[in-house]
Image 1: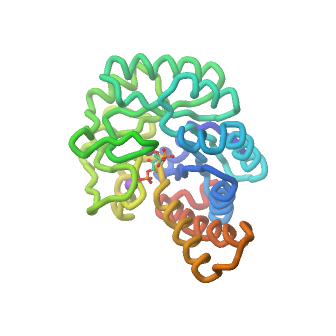
Image 2: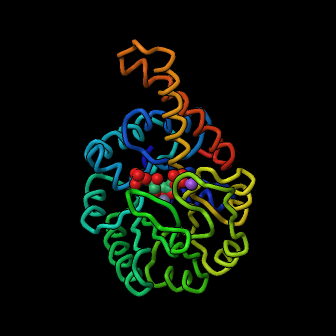
Length: 283
Ligand code: G3H
Ligand code: 13P
Ligand code: ZN
Ligand code: NA
């Protein structure tokens, strides 16, 4: 059943677990995510990045996402990931997304506040809830690369002001994670999560969570992280399974035969995450 991001995340906040937000580009990954959510009885967020929307088209993603949500009992939010463009946010809202991220993290604080506030005002008028980002999360998404030296951790006092002035519903914070594959083992700044948690009361979001040790994710959840974004680990299980299948079955030409095992593999990866996040049996 389709719900807003805020409805899912407030329950997570109250009950100290995190909802997984998994990136979608096509039917197979949507089926894998919904299958995992049903098998573990988990609420879940389907999120599409700008790259994902460009690939599949907003109509396809919105229609598939809403269909999947309408066919299942588990709570599902349909979310725009890292929206940077006002017009595209409006398009997603028009197509029935129940949650949008407006990522103004490239702007100086004042501009990020003004940009985010404008989106929040409009989204709230039509019952859509909003995520924003403060601080800069490292790594690459959609060809935007934030190098390690440009990544800046979220300042707790700025976060307080940002939340008060924008009215945003949940906040992505930069505390040591990065998009994509890690070179070493990422170290999270737990004190910073705690400092932010102590002065703002909306749900907090962790990006770049593929490759973060499970113990670190569990600790982050215990300190107030309520939404955990995963893309890279799903891509990796997709690619590994397709490659293995084709190596073993070089004459196979049927997309269903090639993609079926990959869908199963993605589902297993997602179920493992849901166990770690504690979202199982919370639907
Ligand atoms: O936020 C980052 C996600 O991994 C999306 O990546 O922009 O390549 O679709 P993408
Ligand atoms: P990963 O690809 O590192 O899992 O990050 C996903 C993300 O943050 C999407 O917004
Ligand atoms: Zn992200
Ligand atoms: Na990552």
